[in-house]
Image 1: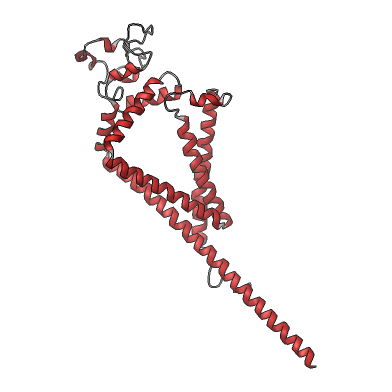
Image 2: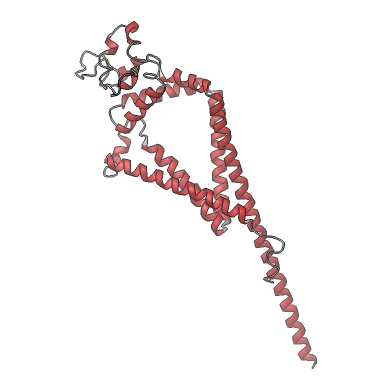
Length: 293
């Protein structure tokens, strides 16, 4: 029986160890991202005061590490252990979870195209909420500064959006030194400067609009983001298609491996049943032989 057990069906070692090796990288990377997120929270004292998670009015970038890392950890664990142990439940969970993510990405892309004006309004609202909380969290502050520097923009639709922040607004009762100013990331860059002047945005918005453009980027981040998408449409589309194909490929490999495992289990079950039937038949023949003699 053992010699014929895998004669007809067998698990593909190539698929098995490819899924294992591919997912162990995601598993380790997911753990690393979660670890970075926990370390960042511990540095900000969030772990000692969990309620402070909800204190921030804008987005805490650490959430991105936690969510992405958690999803990668779960997927990597299911795919890695499922392939190594030939566990059909974990492999099916892996393929279904990956399929759900693919469906959500596809749905998001279609809705973003259909409701692009609504998405634009939500992006404006999202940026303005983060502008209000600019000084409340160092990670959020670094993220906004990076965005404004990379896209050479200021605010959601212009520099005046910084009136939403209590430190930068132009109200008469504002005692802040940054009153009527903008963050340094809004300033135009001078190639001759090696050291960033963090005070370059002070009192800028008190100047006439015609003079502001000589010191700061006056375009908003929403239109600059739209321009960036148009200029890099091929790159963005290629990345999305590549990720989608990778997900479909992973689902197909997992389902193929599940089919191989189930086929081997079915073959084994048939062999055991045939063996049991043969043993019962031989036992009956021996018993009959003894009775006759």
